[in-house]
Figure 1: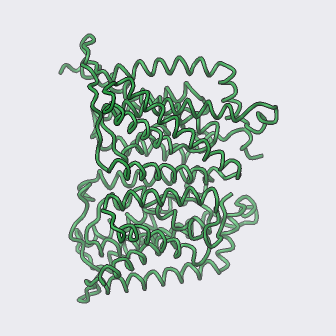
Figure 2: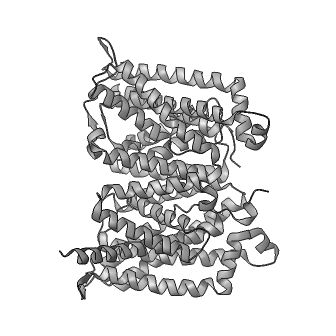
Figure 3: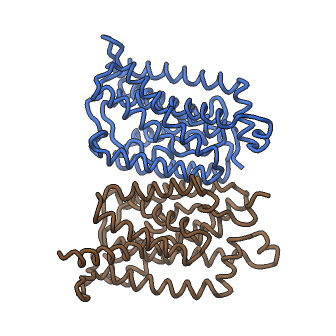
Length: 293
Length: 289
């Protein structure tokens, strides 16, 4: 393959991988900035979306309906998680305890899926369609779906962030006590956040499940990738995670091209480790009402 | 009978791990998830010393403990600067990096295939080969570890630890040397975890990275939190409960994959319920705020 075409292919793969990470990073970031829960259970939402899409696709043989089923399953899990988070909030649990609870919920979800569906890979039965030739590049339907989804979600979120709802989300993330004291409905904001993250995680889970199949133990790495992108994105609710996700996706693609595939995860976890160790307050960005005097 | 000795061995090894992790979680107040990385380092280092350098067991064991203790010092230094969720997240990232390194450094660790043919515990011509002898030896080591930690936690040193846990700013203001205390505590806890790893590697004679992954870290954390952090019998009770769960599931007829899945559910449930209803654990230990 010609060298420039190879790099073009690498860039395309990077952007597609980055789109997945970016979408999930936005979902992670919204939950993390508003509830202060390090949202490892995002993996459970992806898992729910993937299993629902795969099993529904076997029943209806329709890609769109399977994806919608995945989104609804993920929203349902998201609402359960919201109840769990509000229980922790009522008890004024520390951030560390909330993280432990989140890890616990993720493990429960994985175990339940392994019991219900078995430990092996399950695949859907809907063909994804044939690839398209765009100039010198061969674009698969999944690439196309991610690109369209990222642009759509990007536009929707951009509009949302600048709307009163977006302002409310930013305000809850910054100082939730003040937001409540001023008479605003914090619960409404949290419901919107959880439904939005359910839609994003369900969508990503459905596509991943229909593309690669689904198995219960496989979604921790992508959740960690999303968390890294969200944290590196800083306090921003939208642009930061999107840019960080795309950059991570491109780095992953370049690393696949130039290094061994096995080292990519190590590098991403290493970035997370270094970022947390050297810039904890920048990375974890405490809310205004959590700042030390 | 061998089965009972096998479970006793596992209980002893996980008691060492839980008691040592309690030093960090209960007494120092750091919710660290990287303890199974120290466990892995002990197992891999001792196995490598015995397989590659053909060192005798006691020397390999000593080198593995010392090396893991030294490796833990930068971790202690980093942990000293962090609080709350940053500690949990940083230690989890460290665990993931360690496990990935074990998978990727194939020449040293055997990669995903792991290391095979690790010699059993031996002192000169005396080899501990039977289930019974290995379990008794491990229980002995676990008892010594428990006594060592109890001695530490009732000493003046423990008051410094608890001062740093409860109010680090005031403790440092009162000239409690936090760096030294963090170094000592991490070195002791990681050394004990490495010792557990050495025992495990020699018992199993085969290790691979999947033994030391995130589920192991969660199980260890669950042991300490479930029993009650900073309570003398808390980690021991936690280890007993967590070790018993898969054995009970196996006894009622579950296959290996079913046992693993049920273990995930129970561990997850324990951590979640702990966080919501019983942050002090069963025996009422230190509560995270």
